[in-house]
Amino acid sequence: MPTRHALVADALRALLLSMFLISAAEGQAPRTILAIGGHAGDMELTAGAVLLGAHQRGDRVVILHLTLGEGGNPKLSPAEYGAQKKREAEAVASALGADVLFGPYRDGEIPNDEAARRYVADVMRQVKPTLVITHWKESLHKDHSITSAVVQDAVLLASLPGVTLAHPAWRGIRSVWYADNWEDATNFAPYVFVKVTDALSAWRAAVSQYEFARGGIAGFPYVEYYSALATVRGAVVYKGQAVAFAVEPEARRRVLDSLP
Ligand SMILES: [Zn+2]
Image (cartoon, rainbow, N blue to C red):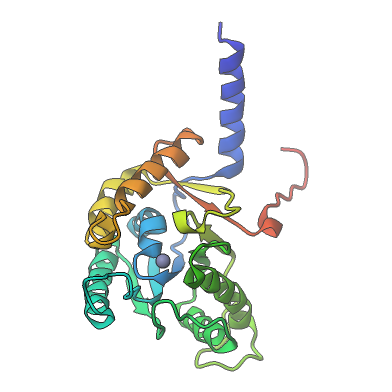
């Protein structure tokens, strides 16, 4: 006879799976996912395994790096390290099956202004995503928190026909998910969990092409950290390895016509 503890664990598991887990969607139409990060490497490390899984399922994946993150190498000039980061970003995107775009901004200098919102909105209009992934809003890095704010406002601008940009309005963005980044951890609450077990080893090989991700520049073991985090997030939803995302508080809502 199962113990009370086991019964509680089973009930909890069923609840979690029914509420929070996005399973591989068999037979769904391909979609377009746009991941927008402050620095080359942010989106691939935090969400890359999900992006790779989406690509393998037939979705289109586009990554926009607002900056190269070229200021982070004390041994190289920003120009030298920026050239390296661009090469690495292209190789990583290719390995993840993603198209890659580079914003016009410099590391540490993403402007929190209307022009940046219009720039990102026009990329959204061009790419036509249904899902946008970006940074959580509270971060120790101002490029990350500004990216989050810019992206959130750009979703609205992209949708408004009265806002004149190079491309026509795009109203198809159904969700904005915030990535689980160790630098953006303040008040980050995991809400959506995506299983990534099948994509994890290919993701590790892809992101290891960034020198900094291997721990070779700042000393932070990025690949090891995010690999371990996938195990932690997967454990609590009983799905092997998973990647978690936060959503806006007002998006944490289930609407039912009747009791399930
Ligand atoms: Zn960053």
